[in-house]
Image 1 (cartoon, rainbow, N blue to C red):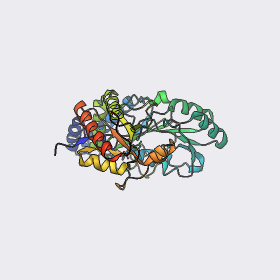
Image 2: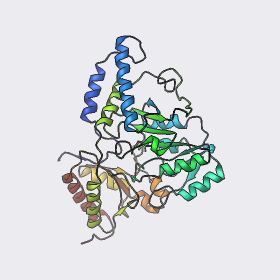
Image 3: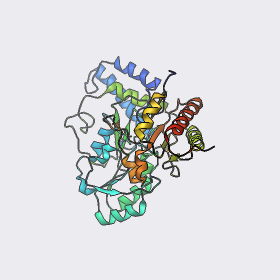
Image 4: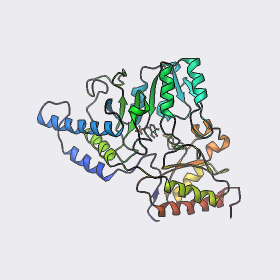
Amino acid sequence: MATPVYLDWNASAPLAESAGAAMTRAFATAGNPSSVHAAGRAARKIVEDARAAIAQAAGAADARVVFTGGGTEANALALNGFAPAECLVSAIEHDSVWNPLSGAGVIPVTPECVVDLSEFQRLLDARKPRLVAVMLANNETGAIQPVAEIARLAHGAGARVHCDAVQAFGRMPVDFAGLGVDTMALSAHKIGGPQGVGALVARKAAVLAPVFAGGQEQGIRAGTHNVAGIAGFAAAVRSAVPMSPELRDMLENALRKAHIGCVVHGAKAPRLPNTSCIGLPGVTAETQVMALDLAGFAVSAGAACSSGKVKESRVLAAMGAGKGAGEAIRVSLGPATTAAEIEAFARAWAALAGRLAPVSAAA
Ligand code: PLP
């Protein structure tokens, strides 16, 4: 079989060469950043240089950057200390925000996967939350949320705002100061850094409740720093290249042409340039993912479940997709994706649709 084509960059991007090289160099540094001797200072310098690079890339020069063990932990740190009943959360958040806030007020989204601002205002007035959590770009559809406006409205009502920018950072311009949020979660492995490293960006005035007690990371995140991981994160950030939507659009046009039943969920929303959520009515997401895997293409179901099983997408259900919530795959591209790969994928998808979908193929 030909080399598999990887179209699941939103699940995890391949390690960038620059990140691998930076990690190899950092692994050769013996020290613990908390030690005062020269080796410790050398390790500390790696961490502080990375902190400055990430702050700069995130438009957060005046903010605090706290390194964590990934995006999930950054979200947990931001939410720690808030009871769900005191919070509002968008219906399309990643599980790492959604699950800890079970019982919070839910902000609905439009059928295009964008937070409904008038409903949000109504919920703000009715519930007077202490915290509002809305992501910057959705991991399944790529839909970009009106976070600056949400922060303005939430602050007007006295609430703090957390933004999960894990999928957005490195793929679109992210400006922490311009968004006006209080805390923002980042992750390294979506943009070519290593898995298991992330950061919480926080306004200096925002009080954070540590998840792990101890001394490191400004007293906010205990545990010896993952120096090599942090170095890899910064290297990936430095070498991240903005993507154009050209290949994504080429893909969607080809699939729409190949099969009359093809649905692109959230297509009318402002979106990340690399993400397509594609529905094939009558064929379960699991069947599509497995058939494409056999054909040599790695994509995921709308929601990649931690157990490796495919279940109906909560995000698509919130968009009102009905039965379609269990019939969509996510195709996510990266800077290394080529037009030839997209053409090959479109051929494989068209063959699958012709074989499995009950609607007849368009001419
Ligand atoms: N938030 C979003 C939107 C994500 O897509 C993910 C990962 O899939 C996370 C948070 C979790 O990040 P990590 O895998 O670094 O824990």
